[in-house]
Amino acid sequence: MARAGNKNIQAKLVLLGDMGAGKTSLVLRFVKGQFHEYQESTIGAAFFTQVLSLNEATVKFDIWDTAGQERYHSLAPMYYRGAAAAVVVYDLTSMDSFQRAKKWVQELQRQAGNPKLIMFLVANKADLNEKRQVHNEEGEQYAKENGLSFLETSAKTAQNVNELFYEIAKRVAKAT
Ligand code: GDP
Ligand code: MG
Image 1 (cartoon, rainbow, N blue to C red):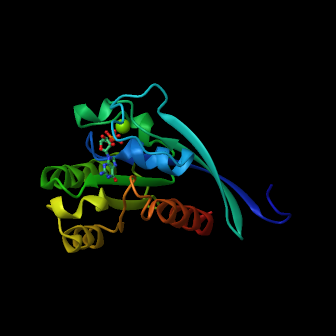
Image 2: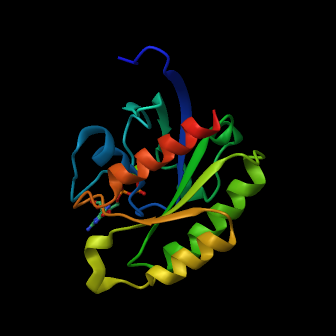
């Protein structure tokens, strides 16, 4: 329940990034507290809602995950339309997925057309540090240069997953 005087905010959040980066896993970790080693690459439902209560506001997220469309390396304009926040995910064990993430950032900046869009770059699979191909500093640097916030996460261990969504919720609340 929202406390009296608090803002009730509805915010659309979209996830981008190549297949296999862990977008669906991050959402399922956040929404259901679950992780699946063999996450189905295309799941039926690509839409989730989750409510986060902050001191200053209650934020209801409409989370748009892809149901495999990202394999075509572009997403329909309706996917971005009206989004308050976007999370671009890559797999830190794959330099390829980092390079692709940069393309997604460019696509996002071209398509979303919203200068107030809250953008995060997320390096996922931090639990696989021994297989790491992308240094923390590389991700951080790219994010900084392009106006995105940066976090390393693991959907497997839950590292920084709640932090990511809370941080987005706070930023959304502040901007609303
Ligand atoms: P998506 O295509 O971006 O939605 O990626 P998925 O969520 O389907 O994840 C692809 C694969 O990576 C699945 O086998 C997941 O179990 C695995 N995966 C996702 N996140 C992590 C993580 O943080 N750590 C590890 N070790 N594996 C992960
Ligand atoms: Mg997926």
